[in-house]
Image (spheres, helix red, strand yellow):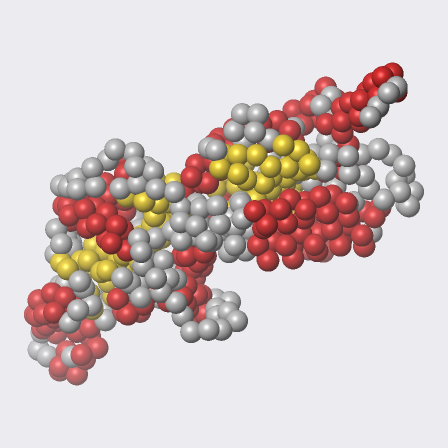
Length: 519
C-alpha cells in the first residue's frame, strides 16, 4: 500500500507523460501526414473500429540502443497495436506511424506486430494491418530484416486460420510488400498508396527507365495490371468503410461460419427481368452484373478485383441472408473466356471462400479458354489447373448455374458436377457441349466439308443439327450432370433453398499434409 501520496502522484504523472509521448498526438505529426493527404496512425484506427472500442497494447515498447543515433526516442516504436471491435466483433489491428522515422520497421516494431498476430491466433479473430512505412530501419541492419521475417512467417501460419486484411495507405516497398501479399485481401487508396519491390531510382540505375512512383506501383496499376490489390478507393474514409463491409461477409475464423444477416428480401422473389438480360443468341454480350444484382439480396454486391481480369467477376453478396462468394463469367470482355489472369483471380477467391466457409455460387457462360500463342507460352495450362484444383479441393457448398454457354474444359473449370458441385442448374437456353456447333462440325465433318459442292450450306445444316442435339441442357440433365433445368426467374429461389439444405454439409478428403496446388 502506498503511504506517500505525493510520491504516488509523481508516479502517475510520470506514466501520463510517457503515454502522452508514446501517443505522438502532436500537431507536427498530424501536419506531417496531412500534407501527404493521409490520416495519422491513430485516426485511422478510429475510422476503422467501433467507437471507443480500441484497446492499445505495447505503447511503451522501445528499440535497441546499441547503434549510432539509437538514443533518439521513437514514440510507440513507429506502430500502434491493439484490439477492438467492428460491428461488435473482435479484431486485432496494427497501424504504422509514418510521422515517426517514416514508420520504418525495426526488430521491436516487428515484435509488436507479431504479438498482435499471436493474440489473433490464440483468440481466433481477424487481423487488419495498416501499412505506411518507408521500409526497414537501415540502422538496425539484419535485426530489421529479422523483424520482417517474423511477420512473413506469421502471415503464412495464420493463413486460412483467421482472415488477414492489409491496408496499404502510404509507401510499402521492397521486402515489406510481401506481408500484404501473403494476406487474404489488400486495400489501396488512389494517390497515396505505393507498392513496389524496387523503386524508381534503382530501376533507373539498372534499366535507364525512371517511372513515376504511382505509375510504377500505385493503386490503379495494381488494381488493373498486376492484380496485386483487391480494392481501390479514392479516400481513406471510403477504404475503411469497405473493410468494415468486407468483414461482415467473413467469419471470425476457419472454425466458424460467416454470420447470416436477414435483411428483408423475399428468398422466393422471382425476377422476370432475368429472361431479358441474357440473350439466347450466344453471339450477343450482356453485363453479368445485372444477373447478379437480380439474384442477391437487395442487389448488394461487393465486387473483388473489379478492374483486373474483367472477363471474370468475383465478389461477396447475400442470398436469404447467407453470405456467398460469386464467380461469374463476364461476356462483355473476351466473350467471357477464361485466361491466365482470370484463372488466377478465380483460384485465389475460391480458396479464400473455402478457407472461411463461404458458399460458392458459380454463374456459367463460358465459351472456352482464351486461344493464342501468348496464352500457351504464358502457362495457361498451369494457371487453368489452379482453378480446377481450387474447386476440387473446396468443401464449402458449391452451387452452379449455367445461364448460356458451357464449353469444353472451361465448363469443367467453372465447377461442373464432376468438379464437386453440389447442385447444378441450367437455364433453358444453356449450351453444354465440348465446343460450339461451328467448331464441332469442322472437327467432325472435315472430310465432307472439303468435298462438298457447297461447303458453307453444308456447314450451316450440320451446325443446326449439332445444336438441336447437343447445344441444349437436356442431354446433360438426362445423364445427371444437370440436376434441374429451371426458368431464369427461379434462380434466386433455387439458390436460397439450396443454401438452407447445404448448411449442414460435411465433406472431407483423404488424410494428407496438404495438397500440391500447381503454382
